[in-house]
Length: 208
Image (cartoon, rainbow, N blue to C red; front, side):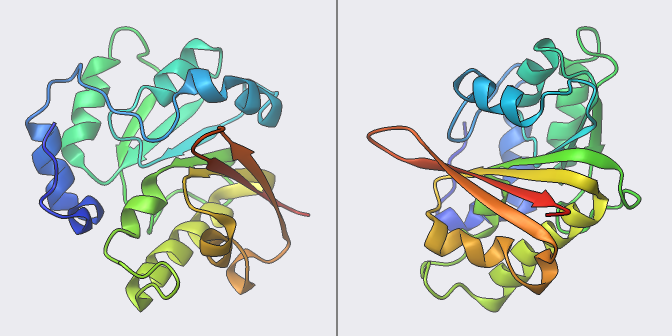
């Protein structure tokens, strides 16, 4: 696994294309928590296993693969790295041929309105924040990027859809991106995960 020279590289397409080019289709990396860690929460939040699910910034994580194996058979994965999308498509071509893998930037989703029941972000928005060293006052571009993702997600979610965001970011640093004019008519729920080191699961529900 190629590590960046500085954390800002985590927010660049060039870094991820280079990193994934050096890895095999079987290599995998999961930010924060695995599906096994979160399966009970996911099953509670998504009781209908036929729900159409959008995985934002899928990378080469096994999260969506494990969800698929748990019965969620309607998953669309997107990532702006064409390299990893091709490798993930190859990795799943025989075992999960119906799962979709699309090259797409989470800041400019091209799906029609009201296309999904659930969207999941596990660390993707966090990667966009790595260009900032000041969590209290992130640069304008970071704010624009994060708001663009959330706005786009809410657009492609159906009227009672949910956006699930998993991160180490504490509420006073993350709520600004999940609440406001771009997220009107929504309800935000926050769950703390872990014991010694806390992660957070934010659930932004439409139509609330």
